[in-house]
Image: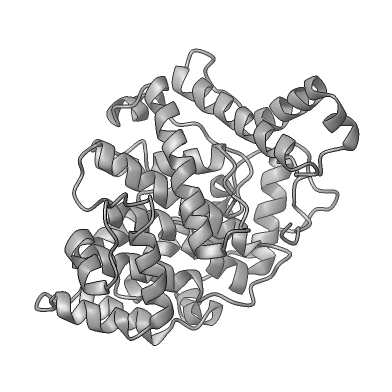
Length: 366
């Protein structure tokens, strides 16, 4: 089991495991603490809640000793709120949270170069054998469902697309770039588990809606909380305050960020991706992943909905414990009903298993 932080959920007791009724009641209570239903008549929210209970039950029964996520109890200690941070100064330290590989910058360059072709993309990716193997494993997995084997990057580009493969390569590169972050604040496997799930869900929703370039939604989901790594690395006192106060006040971390930091993690993420010269499309999606009330386009709701689903179903965490359900109008705009949510989450489970096995190995827990 990954190393726990002081804010980790409490472990399931042996007594609860001995009695399935007690176990189910404990699980329902733990899910309710994280995911209070705002409207009993919201059929979508109720479906997601029941899925969260069912998934947590499966985990508890298949892996005795699995921790329950509990969101209600405040930590035993309190911290004093630090002064607000300066986002410009923080951006100047952006690379200290992990040295970005030269390959990442080369991928950004080719993505932003209109004259770059498939051969340029293949040459850059093929120069890194580990990345090549990882991408070919992904393209040949059920995640893509091809009926034949793809054995070269050039052939992968034919079926996935040059731009989309570059964005996948960017995401895969960043997964291994960040080292030395405080384990007392962030568990990296849990962080990337949440991010991978958000990306996989966004890709599925984009495909369901027949949106162009669904892989770009996957990468946006993968990177949507990237700025939280910068906060953990460079503002540990602020991060600790946010994590503890969110528990104590029964709020999301996101709700407290503006007053604590002076900015939100999506605003910082947008600045960070601009500094890296990422495509504006990617920057905009990172900036909008909490802005559901301002969104009139269904496309802009894909990432907020995917983030909420990943949180509610407990696929890792970037720091949030409490889930804020979305308005029923969001699901209507996405064309989703309770039964389609069930189908979406069933397919999502399969995709997440594939992706976690690729990124973390066969033993990586969902």
